[in-house]
Length: 305
Length: 262
Image (tube, rainbow over all chains, first blue to last red):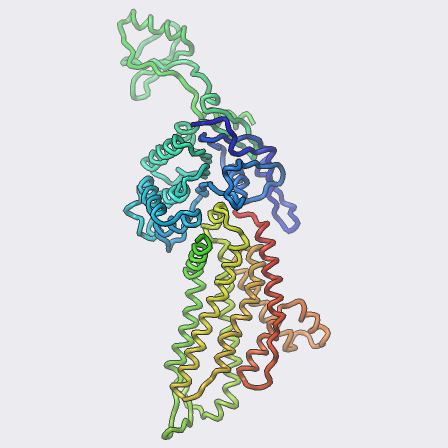
């Protein structure tokens, strides 16, 4: 459930990495970024490599210090000792000590989160089940594939039922089945009220799960909004036909292997098209609303820069 | 509970480092050489010579000429190997893939750094004490000699020097994050300051006294333990070496608190 309550607010965040002995070699990873993260939402942070997605996550997690700007965390995210807590994090290129078993890793990290005894055992079993690693739980991680490591990374991130979950490129190393598993898991966590921030450049995946998306390029936040806002309303239709038809009004048809797809650009043109087909006694196989994909929006936004 | 888990995780990480395996190999080789390389030749109950890898050496020669040489030589070898082994032991904590996860779980950086430091020193100390105990037992049962002073020197000398050096390594590790850099700097630091104190590099006492305050007091610590082992004049243990450890650690903690985790 998405609420209007902010859980994190980022204000004028700038991060400059300095290299060289006197810091003469400077790279601006984030430039004057401001936005809010709301409770219960799935926010997709999109961008090309080097857009500043990981830097943003690390700034929010206090792993690196911002050069300028502030990040306001909700009180809920802090433990009784005033330390930032109740956060799940899957780092990009997640690695695990190769000598550890999944069970040992989860047990240790769960203990660090204050879980113990039966509760910890149950949570370990539960999350291993969610990421389908129960059978490999007692194997050392050196025997794991890349996909299994990522799934273990997701398991450790959700082990302590965090209020907010940061996933940095979680589906990169996964096979199609793994991607579906992660997608369903994210939707389920979101239903349970977990706020999820997901960094990715797999836009087709994101489009299926995210409520909002933020597009970054070269450290700047170019656009942010709900996925439907970004994609906009559909701009026409595809009329799928069983055979080729020559339209008088110049509607073009192409065969994409599934049938003849005829592109119409407005509702009135659609009506005109259907009338014409009726006269020819042809029934359309399907009428699909023409939509801009998130990928197209992303590329367009980047190109405008 | 959190601290216990963290102790387990950090120790687990140290135990699984190649450097730790290297240290184990060094220690086991020493024990192996002692057990099987050195034998006593007796005439009745009287020990007349000691056979080192099949070569008989008279007891008197061993006690008055060879032993001091052997101890000094062995000391240098042990110090070299221990520095090579110990430097990565500590500095590799920066490469721990779980480091960002510890930090977002509210584990303080101070606690993390201190734990790695304490474990690294304790492991070296433990390994050396075990070897020293084997020294004592082997010499007692093989030759009827109790070599407590040599054992004391080898048990506590290298760990204390390493404790000072790892303090320095803590700073180097935070800045460079490369175990190899740590190792090279520590070796350089150790040998350079020994050369200085032994007068190979600088000859005036003024220069030496200046360096005395710049470099950690490794030479004094070494003098104390070696002289104890060789039973000559015993130098007082330089308690102020602990001050260096504290200063190094404090600096490392300040740097680590400000460090960005990649």
